[in-house]
Image 1 (cartoon, helix red, strand yellow):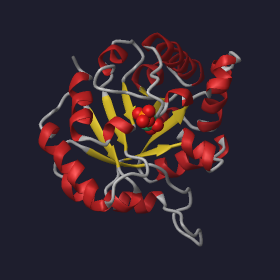
Image 2 (cartoon, rainbow, N blue to C red):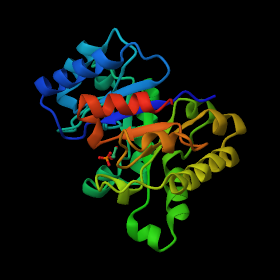
Image 3 (cartoon, rainbow, N blue to C red):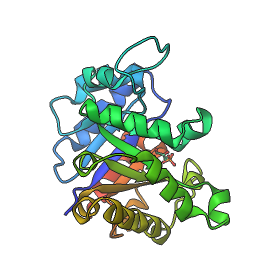
Length: 252
Ligand code: 13P
């Protein structure tokens, strides 16, 4: 049985003061909630302060990106080691916004995953097709290429720490959620791919999240699907009420 995981990707929102306020509100509502793993991913600048708020609770901290070197002359970058130092246990890697605006390739995603794993951070690896790719019937091909690139040379032991997030680009921030069966179709493919390329155990245990306009009103039906183990939430993670409702609704 896979434990549900709901992660909030705050993207480039919230000053550290606003972040503390949001994390405090979330903590009040759900810190006693034991059935679901909850991860908050604020911007880098708020990680330290949000960690102060949630460190003695079940709520975990994640970052939205990292650079693969531990340290060095890489102006503007942040390493896995630095994220650990702020209290992170998770890190989002390969989000479509990073692929699109910062030209991150599958090879970069792979290097970032290795670095996260070497530093004991659990990567939340994002994959997903654009609308154009979906319309050309290329969805499965695109996802397979992203999976192959991301997990190149990873072994079964390393895969144990991975979480995958299927985020169709056309559903991100558009209010247009993939229908549960559409998400399930791809997520089931991902699980079969894991079975074929790693092992049955890996496929059975690895959590696959759905991301793209998740709201309190659609999380239940998404979670009913066999291969959807949780959600990576953008917009709706920025308010206490909507995020905590998603967490609650994810298990009933
Ligand atoms: P929205 O929930 O705002 O569509 O964003 C999804 C996302 O990109 C999470 O990483």
